[in-house]
Length: 195
Image 1: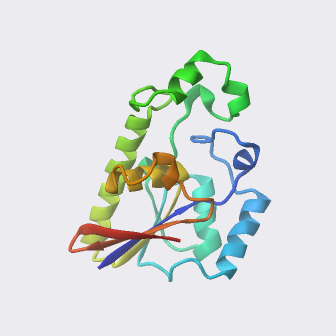
Image 2: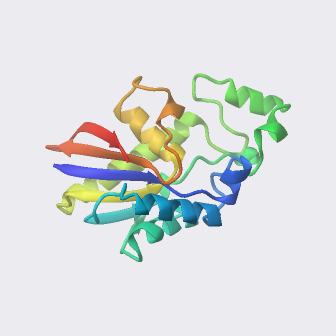
């Protein structure tokens, strides 16, 4: 049996302001660090893992540091959040009157890209490929567990891929500092539970 723990990074200033934040490399906010400490005190996080990974972004790195200290980890850039292109670091209210924004949020095919950024489909393809490569690395190392500090959209892509049509894509996005434990048996995904 193998367990993969996917946890969303703690709050950033962009999250607090309701900004689209994908490629912007922000640190945790003071509130984000405090919230992670409070969740740790509740004992919600798994025991130390055999292997650690992050998206390589500062907020993910700082989340892992806050939860497990300066453990050895591997950054996997393919697990970064969606690239929101020209919508990056803007709010819904700032974007709502733009036709290109309306076309993006009204697109149900997943093919419409943020201008200068990714479409939902290209984002999901990137994440699923990176997640698959990470899984192969964990299996090759004989690891029984791995902890991944990443992003809400990243986690939603993985769960949406593993459990298609089980929930709305956005329904899979955990709160900051939360996530899922995915259990694999004989190399196959079997079940999940919320963290």
